Length: 444
Ligand SMILES: [Zn+2]
Image (cartoon, rainbow, N blue to C red):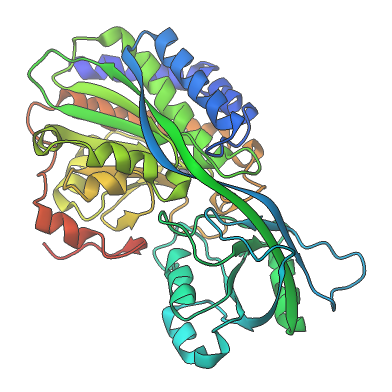
């Protein structure tokens, strides 16, 4: 089998060579790559240089417009806090500002913050700062932040205070919604949140933000196949949140995608299908970079995509999952592709509307996300979306294993003469994404 030698060549280099681990750290050293900052621009330059240097074809920037946002002040205080206590906050992306000088708000403890919690709290919500728990992002039993934020807004909360699930006195962050937030929304440390819950009463919240029309660029590169085939899209988002190194999320996925692409670059014209490597930005702002790109594709272009393989938080635990988003035939195909792979992987048919692959799924394209730490609530993956998302949370062997498995599935897709899974109709695709976060696969 011709693919066998290519694969052993690539996995051999991923395992034995220093490049994957070095690339991962080079990306971390650029800073957290928050959209609209010099760190994001430096990463775009890094990607362009890297892809050109690797010899990939047609390296280009795919520009799009979005609403830029930055926070210039984010402070909270409570008169009952112990002397010297420092609240450690981070704004959620697109948080609204408070009135100048800040605002005094009564707090309301909504516990987990489900829609039912908000309904039950009734009149205790309007005009108050709702305190809710953040949950481990990568569990099928967790409730996504947005499914707490939206009820808070709907029920008239004046502010949204999200409490980190992890102890350690560092805040959690995330986004509010891609269309913006009508209320101030901030993440708190576990300890700050528990203190506010115990004290009750009023907080003083001061959030200042600036918004302006902005532009950003996805980075794209190609590896043409023999001609007449379909397209396989390997993707990873290169932006992060404005803290730590955004190492787990998503220097891991970027480093793996770059190294796989580099090893394949010399094989131009060799595979049945064409490869495109996409690095999206503003993913942390509600998947905006990939949405702009995927929504601009014609029906014909969509039909020509065999697979999107999306790498996002691929290390941080020794176990990683191929999330197949309700495509049962795709899950079977992935299981087949991984038959000879060392057993660190799992295949899940759950639908996960939580990274760029979701925009492909929404148009019916077979799409897989590789994700580490699924349902391992205590894994290091839980440090993402926080200042503790730093390179020490990633083990080299875990990143290497995930990159090797990704290369195996990618090669299989590049060599596939027919479809790897059926492209879904518009109606089927719409039913796949009922809400944010995880959903069980629909019955086909
Ligand atoms: Zn991510």
